[in-house]
Structure formats: structure tokens, C-alpha cells
Length: 334
Image 1: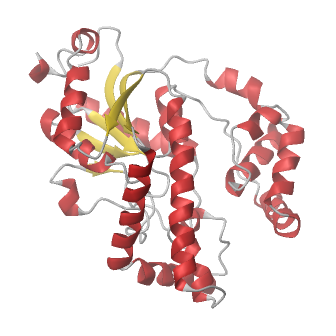
Image 2: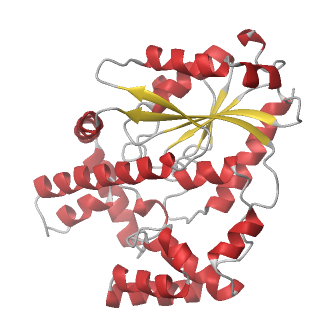
């Protein structure tokens, strides 16, 4: 059931947080008998369902979902590890005659999958990482980022200075490979992609509408028990002497509330910071997704409903190129 060039057809749905990716993925899966694969770097963690907006069983609507909530929050997890699991799951679904729908907001995961990026197999250097974490604690994230910018400008240009985990990983890879990001990237793209990917990106014509949806989502999360969930994670991290830069502790939705638990800030100010951090994250997501080639934009406004967006998805999937390449897989499109 490969396309005529032997590639595996997959559907990819990406977009910023609170954009409606989950609902669209579920309805698309129902229409085409597909299954959903998670491409959100925080939804891989268990015990953080509210903060990460993990789709509930009701929201999944009976559609099988994969790679959600399988990892303890204290564990670190790399894009290379996710790629290994995602590629295996895509292969399994393809053998079963099912269409994989990859959905999420982590641009690095999605672009690495569709471009078939092959990452360096450089093992974690715990001692070196701890040295860099200590440096960041003493001198600040900006100073650590400057170290990377001086040593590997291209790697630095792809990262935000406050994304300490990835800045540290970039310095670690540079330390052990002795090779900058540019040459490594050329090598990593040497192999052709095994996928015929039809990529959809949710785009808000009015960015303020997205921000309003983000604020509403945060309020709903609080009503659903976000404070209690964050307190449980805060307590568990303190008992384990956890590092707030590791694993699921990076998730927006928990760490912003820790200052309240430590009586360093009011709940109101922490909630406002949470909303602001989420808006900032959405901006970064939109910037990343705009760089993806062959992206089919799905424009939404205040009148858009999932059924309307689904019609746009179906129209693209019915195009001659994608239909002809994958006619056996998409028989109900003919």
C-alpha cells in the first residue's frame, strides 16, 4: 500500500497550542480509518495530563492514539528517541493498512520526521551536562547561550536562549563530535525520506483570537485541577531533589506555579505569567511551522468549526498528486 514511488503516505497536522489540532486529527482519523501519533514533546509524559492538554478518552472519540503519556516526568527524552518510536509506529500502522496521522506542536519533532533527519548517536555525558547546568545557574541562561553562539553560531540561531536543555545538548554534541551544526545537518539530510507526507498547519488569520483561546484554555485547566496537579509534581520533584530543567518539569503549566507554592509570588501573578509564557510559546511555534516546506495552511477565524477545517483537509487529500500516489491506501477518496 505504498505510493507509486514506494513511500509510506502519512498525514501531518501541526499548529500552535490551543489551535484545535486534537479535534481536527480525531475527525480526520474517523473519516479515513486512521490512527493518531503524538508529536508533542510534553504529551509523552504521564501525570501531567492537564498541563500538557493531553486528549482525554472522550476527546479521542474511540480513535487509537499512540505515544501519549508513556514516560515518567523525571525522565529526559530526546528528539532522536521520539523519531525511533514514531518511525516504528508508522511502519506498524502501514503494515496494518492504516493511515498514520502525526499531530502535535513540537516543530523539531515534525520537521525531523518529514525531512528524515538522522541524529548523531552521541550518548549523554551526565558530568558535562551538570557542569553546564551549574554554569547557567551561576551566570544565567544568556551567558550559557553566548558560549554556544561563539562556538557554533548556526546551532545557536536555531534555539532560544532560555531553552536551556537544548542549548546544553548542542554544546554537548559539539564537545564530543568536534563538528559544528552546519556540516552535521548536511550529513543528517543525506538519506531520502521514506514518507509521502501531506502536511497541514493551522493558521490564525487573527492572532488575537488565538491568544483569547489560550487564555480560555488556561482558565479551563485551572478549573480542571491544574493547581493540584502542579503541586503534586512540585512535591515529587522536591522529594527527588529534581532539577527543574529536566524532563517533564519543562512543561509550561507547572513551573510557572512553583513560585506560588514557595510563597514567592501570588497565585494571580503566577497565572498571568503562565498565560504570557503560553502566548510566547505559541509565537515560537508559528515561526517554526512557517519554515516547513510543502505546508498546506488551514486558515481559521472566529467562525471556523472543526467540520469546516476538515473539509479543507479532505480537499487537499483529494488532489490528483496525492490521490494517485496513494490510491490503494486512500480508496475512499476516489
